[in-house]
Image (tube, rainbow, N blue to C red; front, side, top):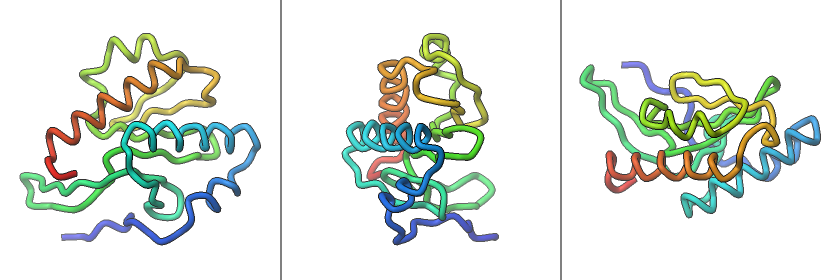
Length: 140
């Protein structure tokens, strides 16, 4: 079984975010950092060299693959701000319709800039996803 390459690292989240360009993306990333920290009550940790994660949980798939991942997190990418909503989005249709301009991947919410979305809706989406993960993976 292949081991995951992305793991928690002892890299400074602050140093990483201070290097994000351009300025608006850096400001948005710092706002998401605060939002997720407030919601989770967890310390931000670098997962790999480009992702900021909060909390962690152990998973095991039917295939036997198991590992550890963050409960929620984000990455300030060149093309967008990626937020990781680990349960996916199937149960959040109503909120997504209210969110504003965004795109979705399997567990990724892509936002060009925070000004494009309703922050209260975003907070609710992150809160519900964290709550879901904590119920599904007790002890996370």
